[in-house]
Structures are given as C-alpha cells and as structure tokens.
Image (cartoon, rainbow, N blue to C red; front, top):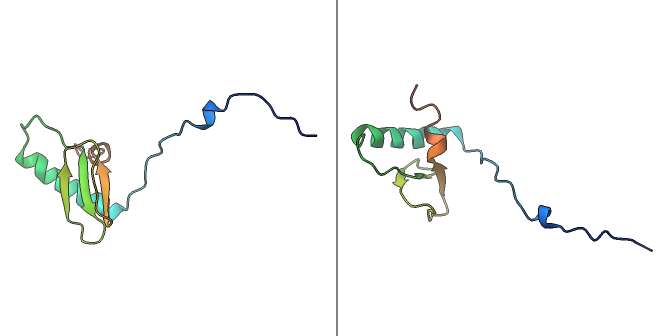
Length: 88
C-alpha cells in the first residue's frame, strides 16, 4: 500500500526566472549598439527595453516594446544587461 500526502503543490508551479547567459561577442555588439543610441539621443525620455541582435551577423536594433518578437537567429539582450558597466 502507498500513502500520499494531501499537501498542496502550489509551490511547484512557481518558477524562478534565472538570468540567461548571452554569448560575450553578442553582448559586446549589443552594448555598442546601445552606446551609439545613447550618445545620439541622450536627452530623449523614452528608454528602450533592450536590443534584438542576430547571433551570426551581429546586426541589431533597439526594441521599445515589452515583449519583442524575434526572428529565429535573433536573441534579445535586455537593458539591464546592457547598462551593467556602461557608465564606467
């Protein structure tokens, strides 16, 4: 005979968001794209949410929406990872 507990399993449904590891080359290119944008648009109020960048060509664009739609070869680098050591 097997006994099971009647405890709720709500805790198992909550997921912890772990930071995603991004290729250093992609991260460097995304930081460069953001840096150029920031130098040209210093006084603009609207902040981008991050950079969508192609993993192979390293071409990217700033994204201003909360949920970006990416192509299969693109990855999203959030603003929090871009500003890490930007103001050295």
